[in-house]
Length: 146
Image (cartoon, rainbow, N blue to C red; front, side, top):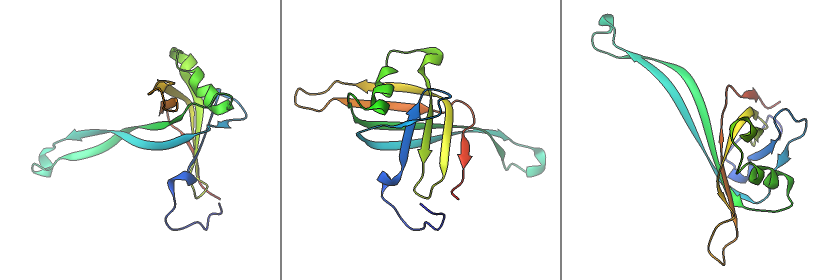
């Protein structure tokens, strides 16, 4: 969307892509239904005499967690990639993850930790789920909309 974007928007206009760390091309993830974002900020606090009992604060760190849930879609490159991380540990569970906002701003998380939390289990008549968390692993690259 052009930078002239304004107003409210439906959440489906947010788009996500994932792929092998350092890959040139990332893939969308089919059949994802919802996501939530959590910012975890580290705040240092102190109580100097000169502030007469009022606390001082400074934000000193940040982390972002994105929880995504949807359906397992075998054969979709992005969905298969996430499902394939379910049994990985260490650096093998890292991937590049890209979040594009409706206004065109792109946030890229290099080497994000992908934590698969649900894979293929449900009621007998339910559609198999795929749920995962994207955990920032260092500072993301933010490219503002042009």
